[in-house]
Amino acid sequence: MTATTAASTRMTKEEKKVIFASSLGTVFEWYDFYLYGSLAAIIGKEFFSGVNEATGFIFALMAFAAGFAVRPFGAVVFGRLGDLVGRKYTFLITIMIMGLSTFVVGLLPAYASIGVAAPIILVCLRLLQGLALGGEYGGAATYVAEHAPQNRRGEFTAWIQTTATLGLFLSLIVIMLTRNFTGTDFESWGWRIPFLVSIVLLFISMWIRLTLSESPAFVKMKAEGTGSKAPVRESFGQWKNLKFVIIALLGLTAGQAVVWYTGQFYALFFLTQTLKVDPQTANLLIAASLIIATPFFIVFGKLSDKIGRKPIIMAGCLIAALTYFPIFQGLTHFANPALEAAQTSSPILVSADPATCRFQFDPIGKAKFLSSCDIAKSALVKSGISYKNEDAPAGTVASVKVGDKVVASFEGVGLDAAAFKAKSAEFSKALTATIKEAGYPAKADPTRVDHAMVLLLLVILVIYVTMVYGPIAAMLVEFFPTRIRYTSMSLPYHIGNGWFGGFLPTVAFAMVAWNGDIYYGLWYPITFALMTFVVGMLFVKETKHVNIHTYDR
Image (cartoon, rainbow, N blue to C red):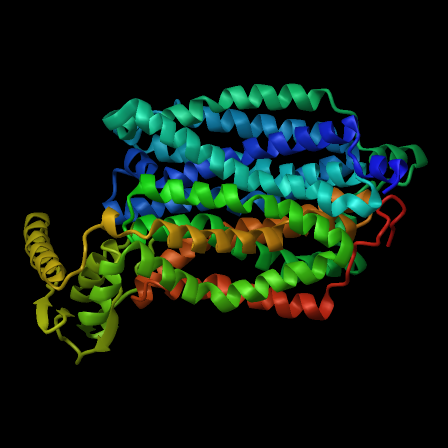
């Protein structure tokens, strides 16, 4: 390698600054979002204590998902702003909104103090965070890609892709340190500290971003007068551009999103909520897997500069879809072998009149699940236990068969509050005793967790994430022309990640509760990963050779 060639492969000081500033701000953005997700159970108790525990947890997940629901709207609002006034100033605004919303969560009084105003304000803050994040990613990806050499866009933008993982990792570290510092007070007030310290990250991110200059591609476009006067209408109102938005969504970001959220968020949810692994242990295992696998974002980003973005993303979607079931079954085997053994030796069967069994998903908290079937299934779902369904004759009171023993449920319709509470306690006591006798553990035994094998499986899941996510920013930037790039790429990215990915925990939870199989929720990411593979192979063209500074459509 000659001295000239070697020098050309090194990043300049300005390029490093651009990547660092964009990445640091995005780390902060994702720290905020993951912080809420990791503390969803505590937040549910603090802000949704006016409803029962199961409904409160669903509310907490819905509030988490609300932030994702509005991300596409943020993409349109801030994408338009970025294409009209510039990349730099737009993502200065987004980070300020995101940071202040996060800080206020740490100060917000709980339900016990201000009643229903608490969850209302919390959801409003989540909506503001989601709107801001809707404009953040497109700005950072566009800004970095427009500064990168043409043959290194995959490598440069891959650094941004590490930020979601690093944001999650940072949130886990801060939570663990705070838990150790506050001890038993963590659930009463210590959980607020990670939200409050985020103000420091906000000031640092704002200061660094203020020192940046505008994107050269945007400056060139403005100087030539070739910018779009109506980027939203041009992006989504003209079929020649809209069709590429649709292809980017269905053939790239939908599959990328579900693979990402399965590997980084749903895996943690499955370990703690279903397998009942100690939260501290689960967080440490997730953090370790991220440390090991995160460099692969850069590996696959650089590889995409050589062989293309499309083959890596498509391979990641296909391999993930084909292996999710054995991997999650492996997590059960190595993290909670007692649960696996009990499911094999003493399978659980719910026998009930199917007409009395309802889909137990109530986003507004108004439904009452009082049939004997609903009561039986609710008790099993809360315990994270798989069961199968058996249709019984009309009018039959539901029962739970554990091995060769049967526990009868009860009909709650018509009972007053005191009678319902007494019957519930009686049924819960009988069911718990029967399940325990059959070998079902209340929690994963720490001495029987095979930490090495669980870590290996988690690392594999994160490597899938790096395959689909590492090259995606460069590909989306290359998919659209400069004058509408920020707007056009932001919407499919945030519909994919905000809706297909962001709703994954809530939808998967409801699917498991409906079907009874703890693995049934995996059909959600598998279906969309396979859809993206098919659409991507048929309609997505390779983009690594596109010159984004002259590209037009």
